[in-house]
Amino acid sequence: MAIFLGILQGITEWLPISSSGHLAIFQHYFDEEPPILFDVILHLGSLIVVSYILRHEIREFAGAIPSTLKNLNNLNNFKDEEKVVFLVIIVSIPTAFIGLLFDGEIISRFYDKMYLVGSCLIVTGTIIWYSKDINHSLDVKDLSSLHAFYIGVFQGLSILPGISRSGITISFLRIFGVEPIKAAKFSFLIFIPAILGATLLKLNQAGSTLEEVGFISILLGFLASVISSFFSIKILLKLINNQQFHYFTPYCLIIGLILILESLI
Figure 1 (tube, rainbow, N blue to C red):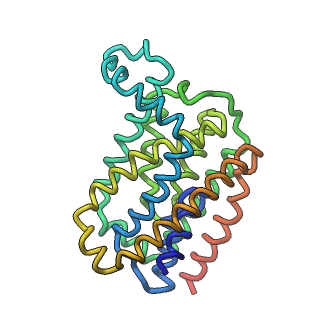
Figure 2: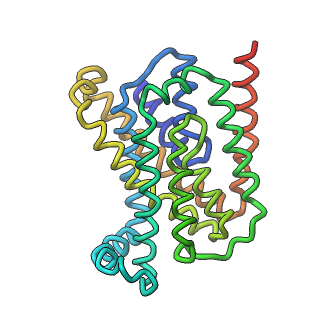
Figure 3: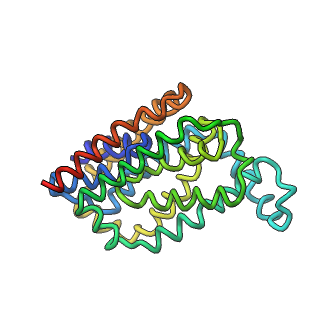
């Protein structure tokens, strides 16, 4: 089961079909709820992969952090790398606020109602489809602080099962005019502080998770997440480069409609 969950998370975290939505579907139909930290550990597998894929961008990003913080009172003179650091900071603020505001009890209500998960999947699919016809010519550094704030809000809303984090952030970056591949890489970059923050919040559950799941199961799930994440990111980047990102819309709409209809019967 741990391997299955690792593969499921690795695929659905990066392909724009919502990892939390598929986890909710799994919990609903299999009547199993993995410990929260186990899910976070699987996300850490994804984090390692995306850190490797973005290793050059992360190196430039890390090198620009000191000068960015030093020049916060002079935003107009930011260099390109400093502007990206500043935008990531802006994105992370509303994402963190939403994550802290909506506690587990509120979000668990979505996991129990498949029509809500289905509705969120339909929203994800619709936004992805809408973004396909937008003219994309901007770099990430061309985004305004307000654009970054909106992206942070959208990323925060992906806490709702069925709202794909990668789907909604990449789509809105494209809607704001960012080139598709650059939009995807920026979406990957802002994933890093988001998952690190979630990990820190759940560290106090580490003991209970090891006891409940077992070290071997956690290790197998982690490795499955790493492998599936690597191939999922490669597939996603290829589809985006070929202008095929919207191919995920039918899947989101069909699964969403099935979940809603099943809830009504």
